[in-house]
Amino acid sequence: MIFSPTVSATVLGDPHFASDKRKMLPSLADLSIRSSSHIGVNKLSDRVAPLDGLAGDGWRLTKRAKKRNDEELRDQPVPAGAISFVIENPLDGKLWSLEGLKELIESEKTNFCPTSYCHYGYDYRKRTGFLTSLRGLRLSPACPQKPCREWSSHSKHKRDIRNDVTDQNERNSIPGPLVDVIMEEWIKKTPGKHRLLIDVFAGWGSVIERVNAKFKGEILTYANDIKNRPGNDIELNMFDFDLDCIIQFAKLKLANLKLANGANGSQVAPEETNLAILLWISTPCETYSSAGGNTSRDSGSIEPKTKKAAAFDAMNTKFAEWLLRVC
Ligand SMILES: [Zn+2]
Figure 1 (spheres, rainbow, N blue to C red):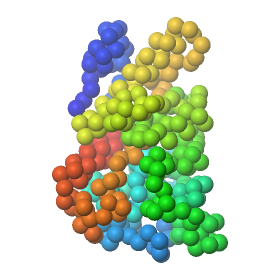
Figure 2: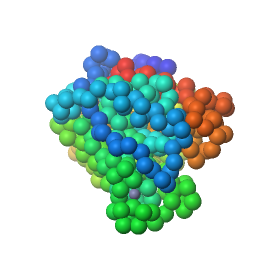
Figure 3: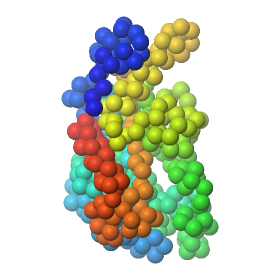
């Protein structure tokens, strides 16, 4: 679904914004991002979280095929009007084996960063992959390939995500220092721009909360989640909406901020012509993660066994195709 500027103006209830917003909408050609590179990863020797055969290896196989990009491109700033993205999911899950995601990992435009949360202050490991258009991003490689302090000293972690972390809020949270590293890289590559972070699957809100606390004045945020939780801006079911649609909704928030700012004149109004957008996509991992057993997919296979798994594949393929085209 394409959300037209006219519809946006109708939602806003002010026809004045129809012409205004039409001018502000960037064309697809304006939205290209020039940046790339990726981190080398050591061979596997993970004794704690064994991989689920070939299906969990998608990112590794595609990375091998990907050409190394030069440092010069990695350090280029994000061009005006560009949309950046971060996709987060379990490192050893099967999302990365989905055809569209593999293509995105292979693209010169992206950078795949494997890491684990024990490097960022958590007392459990949670190996996680971050696929991003921020090609200069560097994260600490995943434990135990690069062992954290705890693993180096005791060959174990204080807690295990599968057995000891039962609170859903905690299980789904992303360490604040890790969020900071990503935001700092984005800020570095978008000097002098207004920044809008759109959390597409905000969940319990750990990313938005951190950014609002640490980057107030530097990054505006917009949170979507299918469940109505405090702090959300909207509740879209992303099976039914495209990424450009959520961007249009987020821009409405900016338009409203402009109205409010115009009234009291106390804040800088975010200008869309000088706007950088970062899509944070923590797509639900329930049908991809090894924690779900073989209910959604057979061991070693990406093929969906349930309607739900097929629906997630369709949604994520839709996102990957859009990101490959637009970013
Ligand atoms: Zn560790």
